[in-house]
Structures are given as structure tokens and as C-alpha cells.
Length: 107
Image (cartoon, rainbow, N blue to C red; front, side, top):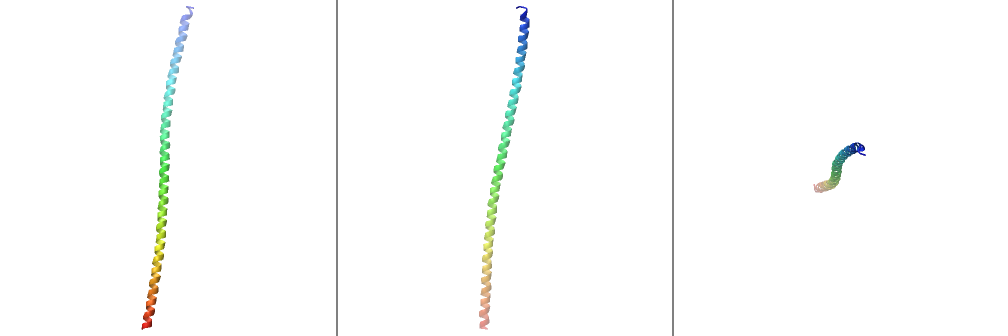
């Protein structure tokens, strides 16, 4: 049994070395997991940023639609103003013709 002791101690030492290597591997794996988590956080922030950009584009689109409606309202208002001016012009022409008619009857 005493002859086996140095051999068993050597095996135990090799086992200790393997455990140390396994612990180093665990540290490397944990570091890799931390890096992946940090990358995931950056990716999440990037996704949030993209979502916010989408929201701002949607707000700008709504603002554009409101501007189109406002322009359309101004155009319709301009058409009614044009019709009102045309009516006034026709009334003016009728008054001039009526005045000329009265003037010609009096002379």
C-alpha cells in the first residue's frame, strides 16, 4: 500500500490540476456570458432606438396629413372666395349695364 501512495498522490495532483483547468474554463465561460449579456443590452438599446425612430416617423406622417388637410381647407376657402369675387363681378357688370340702360333712356 505504501508503494501505491506516491502514485495515488500524483493522480490526486493531476485531478487537482484538471479541477483548476475546469475552474479557468468556468471563468472564461462566465466572461463570455457577461459579454453576451452586454451585447444583448446594447442590441436592446438599438432596438428601442429603432422603435423610437419609427414612432417619430409616424408622428411626422400624422403632421404631414394635418398639413395636407390644412392646405385642402385653404384651397376650398380660396375656391369659395373666387366664387364670391366672380358673383361680385357679375353684380358689378349687371349694375353697369342697368346704369347704361337708364342713362340711354334718359338721353
